[in-house]
Image (cartoon, one colour):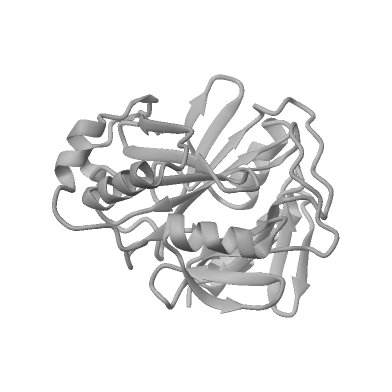
Length: 285
């Protein structure tokens, strides 16, 4: 099953703010392997296949550096089509010498972690086949174990790294939030996601269509963490793709029922979670 197309609801695009556009473009093109879809003096749209934008980066005129202990982006996660693609990425990172922050086996997936020059977190991963995921009733079994790099390398012995493959999608987003009770209500009763995993009292993972997670939510920056200033480096917003107009109307109605604000800006519906993370609601094209 493809967990990133209708009838599933999924994260389609992440929009971030950076301090220096040209520095960020060099990073995202040369190290991550994006292609430029469109560019202005202060922003750029990035794609893997030349058709679908996965990431937008913007340099606000009065931008300030990323501050710690706030809500916002923990990481965005790029999902590669095949395990051999992840092997090529790992070899590429080792050859360039760019520092990784982690490399993990989550049972449902294998992942590499790093940050861009501004400290925006990035995960690059590949899924294990969904038929191999273990479920305990409604919760998927996940863990954080050391990645078997030697075994992964063996998967990608042939071929060289040529940037992000065309089948790359925005697999999920993981957010810092101020608390979990109202956040869970917003994402489940409002947006319609299901909780598929809990990590103690500090994190939960939610999804649509029995994926292991489309969104991660944590309070690791502290309960009550403030939202960052509007001109701060970090998350600007992310786009949530709903299957159709009926789903969109139902979602808007549920959000309003729980007291969440929804605005219409030139045909795009925008809402904000209880921690100030902005979400743009669109339908699949």
